[in-house]
Structures are given as structure tokens and as C-alpha cells.
Image 1 (cartoon, helix red, strand yellow):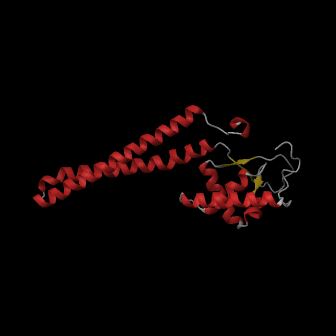
Image 2 (image 1 turned 60 degrees about the horizontal axis):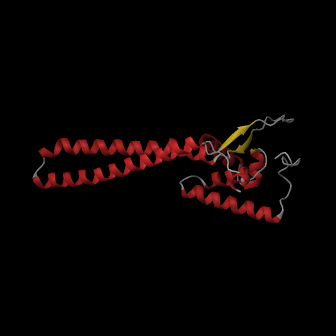
Image 3 (image 1 turned 120 degrees about the horizontal axis):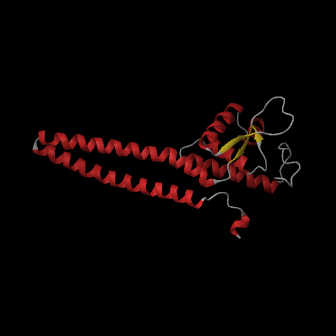
Length: 194
């Protein structure tokens, strides 16, 4: 933030209202991360970086989220891998060569990377397993007695239902990701909304 000459000073106490909002966002994004199966600390770190006007070092992050440096380092690397934060170069006297990070503000970019990388692979894996199991039962059910063949047919029917569901989910996910890419939905600012 260019208007804030002291934006690098993270040791300065925040106004009580700003601190309350910051803590609320940290807690909310921590719960959201937990809900989606990620570490709660990842949400807290992302919130801290997102609501900070400039890059922060691991030491500064550690002080803000009150976690160990090892936890902050590990979770920051995971966020970086996910595309939610990025390492940035800070032009200043930096004899210790500390790393600095800032939040990715393009939420569609984060969601696209997370969904495209993790969920699509999981759906493809589920489809492969279903197709293999349907094929396996279909090839061997003629060797089964009538009761087992009926059960195999029931299994196939259920798996075909799952297959249809996963194909539909993949179509929706792919469409959302393509649409987001076409729209080039980047950072939405308050001015864009008004």
C-alpha cells in the first residue's frame, strides 16, 4: 500500500477494531480451511497475509498468528504450492536473506488451481475405479450362479449411477474452471463493485 509509509512495520499494535476484524477473519478462514480438509493454520496464515498491506516474513507471520516458526514455515510452503501465497523479493537491507510472502488476491486463480489439481484428479481416479469394477463384474457374471449374478447386476447398476454422478460433477467442475478462465476473473475491488 503506497499511502502507508509504515506498512512494513508489523510490530505496531493495531487499532482495537482492526484487531477484532483481523482476529475474526483469521478464525473464519481457519475454520473454512479446516472444513475443506486443510490445516486450520493455513487459513489463519492466508487471512493474515491477505489483510496485510505488504509482504511479511516468516518471523512476522509467526508473531501475528502465534504459532511456531516450524508450523508457519511448513504451512506457508503448502500455501505457496497451492498458489494461495507467493514468495516476493523485498528491496531493503536484508542481511539474513529472509523470505517474504504475500497473499494471492485473485481468488479464482487459487480456486482454479486447487480444484483443477486436486478434485479433477480425484474424480478421474474414481471414474477409473468404477469403470474397472464394472468391467470386472460384467466379464465374470456369466460364471456366477443366478443369485450371485443378480447381486452382480445390482452392483453394476449402483456403480453406473455413481459413474453418472462423477461424470456430471466433472462436467460442472470443468465448466466452472473454463468459465472462470474465460472471464479472467481477477481481483475484484470495491470500485469494481460500486
